[in-house]
Length: 416
Image 1 (cartoon, rainbow, N blue to C red):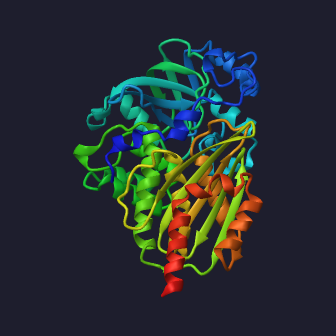
Image 2 (cartoon, helix red, strand yellow):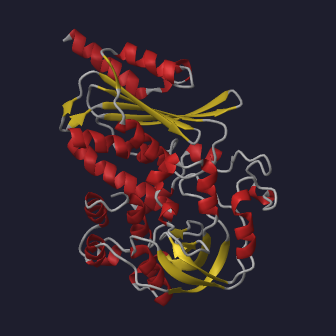
Image 3 (cartoon, rainbow, N blue to C red):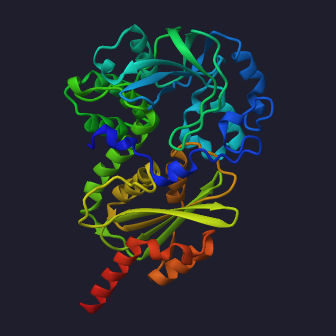
């Protein structure tokens, strides 16, 4: 497993577009955000106005927690809590969000109040009562009723991030009280209690026992898995990428030993102004993401790739989306005991707002659930890619190392 700080790096695309929210009011500059005029906050305006006058919030956490990265190794963390008592698990279940209108996702997430407190990352080794209570929230596999006490009324400032999902008002946490005991899965209890199990193996065990990725991310973020003396608190956005990367590496180890697929397979799907196209080609495992941002008829393109024989390096252009896209593809190849060379084209259109890298992972998963379009030659496959994507191939073909490598392998095979 990489050192956790390696996952702190933002890709160039993440840096460039972190603040570019397509909002007609603030134009992505949150200093200009106004609750009374924000179209994204409209559906939860009354609720937020009510919350802004409350110091004690009682509600059902999905469950959800957030660990910030600013100031690392001293960070802020705490629970996310809507001021309602009801079934709230949908607020955290990313796999269901593709079918939900963008406005509803935002209204759900922006109703979550973030009660935060500062901690040092190694406080996980000896947590105080407040941190222990937050860890108990993270253990639950279904919504848990809690009461959250803030030092003063929370401030309303919409928080968007390229890797993590949006959140609502923020306040300094004084204490929390669990109104009920968390309902915990046996495999989670055993894994958290196993202080001899490395974090990477803990992630794999939980995943293979059908624990959702967002639940695994919570446990890693709050320093609840790994060997005893190496447990520490990890910013949520780093944990998301770490879980995607760790699982991807595990599956890749097996996939590299499988037989190649036959022919060329093209999958695609789109949601929330994002389109993902996956081209699988016969050949040794290699992987590339071409991320295309479309704005006012112009294109900005970011590329990261891995080829056979190369040393692993962090995808400095695409960032966390790289690992989020790679995981579902490796899952599918692992299930089918097949190996392939992979080209992924991601197109982000106007109207997009930062929702987190979950959208890439889930759009890719949905694409791979459909039957692929199949072709006998690379030329046929690329013609179909060009026909079905929004961006002409002439804008990105020269940037693709995977296509260059694949064509060179084809030429060698023909010569032999």
